[in-house]
Image 1 (tube, rainbow, N blue to C red):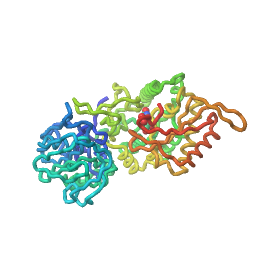
Image 2: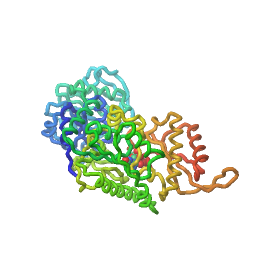
Image 3: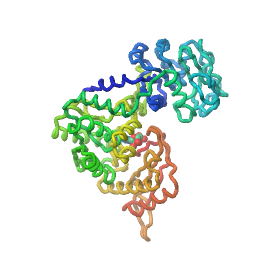
Image 4: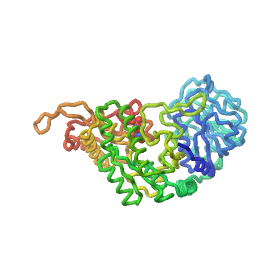
Length: 531
Ligand code: XMP
């Protein structure tokens, strides 16, 4: 496959931007998201990026992220010292501040006390970074090392009871550092501090809006694709749906959407998807009923990774066969998002290359796994967007609310929520249970308060009693989690009355279920899905 996204990347250069040098903190991506919430484009770049290359990008500001290392560790990641001479404002966060201090001649030592969690910050409200903020507020700390001697030209602009140098500034050179994490919600005024840096100090114009993004993407797509045809594999989720709307607006009938029904969707979803797209929005969908193929491929399979692999492989086969039948197509559209591109999901930083490397926990099955030799060029208009930005794009394009607000749903669908063998009967049982769970969560007004809520069907059996008769059937596990991004999650503290209603209805209405248990583990150590 040929990647031809340069045109769209070039477009992004039209916006003022802030680059985040990524030193491997779990919060690096969050910094870029927070900057974008200020309507200024921001992206992560490897910490090794040369000052001369940064100059070519011409960002309005540079943020040095946090990271797990100590600046004096062997092989600790270091940026090009020349970045401090570019005349571009720099803002170091945690490790980023310590590194800046060390490179510019200050001293960093391991502090007597680790500071982790909330700490009261006393700031100089006249300092440009803290301008117009109150003089005392809560900050979120997570560090062992501290700056003990300032580099020349710097002064202390904030302290906590444990850390005398909680923030440092060199206003002349526009170099700033904070020991705490302004990007984390526990830091009060965190977004204001970022605003002071991005808007006031860097003078970045807040021009990054989804309305503009849509307008420009459409003209870019038109210019690139012309009268040629694009194929899009639709899943019914937020990303592929928003993409379908965007592409349809850009190229109209030259877009073909293909929906492969694996048989693992929720109750009525395939029908609803077709109705929404074809009848409501006049976007043609090529529907392929492949249920039979998928279910027979899974016969006798109980291993989760094996299931995922079989489903992924079958998906590619069906996709190839069908696209050949209805093709040819010049372009393949994919809903690849920015976090997929930067591998932020479950990733570590490679100290040699400075790139992020994914740590595999589960084989995710998405269209992204298509073989390299398919003769398509890729169209990936969302590859610079975060999920919440895609939602905003969707809203502006009038994608129905029920799709925009839909909880994440895994590619292999209900098949990985059935422990043990997937059969037609077991799918029906889980589909019915899932529908009841969602119904009760909706009625209680809780759908948008949780990240995901669903049922998992187990193979174990337990004894129950129903109408004086002994039962010996399966339990349903109720899984409900809250999360910001799916990377970590807490089990949701659903009200007892809602739990009770769900439990009563599941046992009364779903044949083959005689017990309901509630999953009260967080991620980590568990994952959200059971397989
Ligand atoms: P886990 O179970 O790893 O899931 O905690 C994290 C998030 O990813 C979703 N998920 C998937 N999404 N294809 C997807 O598109 C997949 O194969 C897949 N597996 C898990 C999961 O629902 C949760 O939101």
